[in-house]
Each structure stands twice: as structure tokens, then as C-alpha cells.
Length: 177
Image: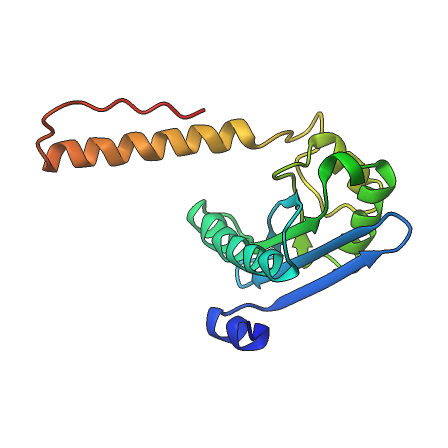
């Protein structure tokens, strides 16, 4: 993949690789758009099969966060961080504090939060090194319940719309776990 061409076509601003030798932290942060304000997006930790897979994921997710933040009426742009590794092997205070130092180096252009395989405890470690983190224990906390509630309301609205335009022969029930 030609990263620069993809970034130009998709309106991306920044794609940053980072590594910490001491903790083994390997990651990529993407800032898609900061027109409305600093980029906000979570940090996910996955054992990507290839570096290219991680790049594709962070680009896709950062762009999605631009739209999500704008749709929510927030004065925030979109960004995302992906960390490459096995969560049960790499997670530690030092690992997330190293991530906090990296986030701090972006000087407020990016604000992180929890995502897949990261927790409020991990965000607290990041917060030891930077103020550019949300989802802290005792403050805004874990966003997953609100994300799930938003998804539920979206599905319900879509089904209400469809049921007024389409005759269903049988009712389908959907359970999201």
C-alpha cells in the first residue's frame, strides 16, 4: 500500500510509528482530521498478523472517529492508536506509561482513550505521563456501556424505520452480546 497516496486521498493528516525498546511497546497513531479540534480516539491492543494490517486498521478507525465525533457534536477531530502485541504478554505499568510519553509528544493534537484490550487502569497509567487521555477510573470511566447503548438505539431506530416501509412476514429478534 502506498501510505502517502492513501493519506492524501482520504484526507489524513498524520501517521506516526513509535517504539519503546525498554517495554517492547510498538504502535501506530493516526490523526485523520483536526478541523473541529484535537483528534480523539481510543487505543486498541491487538496481535496484528502484519504491520500493514495494523496500518489499514488505524487508518480506517481514525477516519471513523472523525465522523463519530462530528456526529456527536463534539469539537474534536478523529484519531486512533493501535498497539501491536499480545495483551497478556505486553501489558504493564511501564508499557502504558511509555505510551503516555508518546501521546504527550504530540502536544495535544491527539487525545487517547480505552478501546479493545485496554482498560481504565491502563488509561490511569497513561495519565501518569500525559493529560491527553480520557476514560479514567473515577472520572469518565469505561465508555463501553454508552457505546453499546448508542448501538442499541441506532438498531432500534433503523428497525422502526424499516417496519414502517417494509412488510415483514415474520418478526426477527436480535440479541447483541
